[in-house]
Length: 253
Image (cartoon, one colour):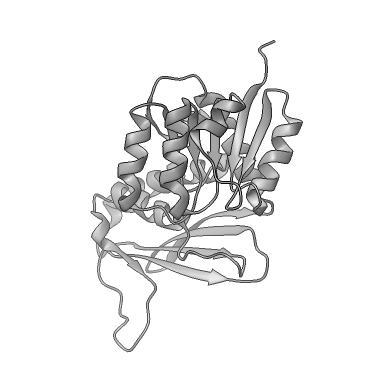
């Protein structure tokens, strides 16, 4: 049996960070060796000191550059589950991917990533019937403390739907309000709800006159995200440098 893979977590003081460390302790394939947060920032030297082979980051978008540099400098695989990442962060991610394996995703749940495939296939199958067109909406619900809106997962789902429909990302609209809120043909709208302590829910709605199809994922625990990230870390550790797709890391698609 192979020795457990030493992993470190950035954002260790947060809810996700705590679950990552706890679940890693329970996984015989992994060995948590360090936790970093705003009071104890991650560095390449700190990762080298504990011989970490993977760094899982669920901290904050503002910490991405430091995490990317630390992982690259230590030769550790970088697993990015931080919310709020956008195209402005691609430079730091690509720089790290030139030196170490990187898996960056808006959501590490295996089932959410299956949802991407189901949604894309549904759009492709329905496209021939788009006489006036099918309306496409994405609705997400999370706990009241979530800082970013809409969620990275909701935006990623909207992009998956747009690509499957052969549209560019300019068709994605955030919310709808005011007196001129009539739906534009071909748009994909993302709606946001913040309620109580809900870990996460994403619903895709495809509607036409007389019928509607809904695809939904409901999370009842953060463990679904944490276990996927740990699985990706175990998969990525020791692989050649590069930016890997989450579906590949999770063995789906």
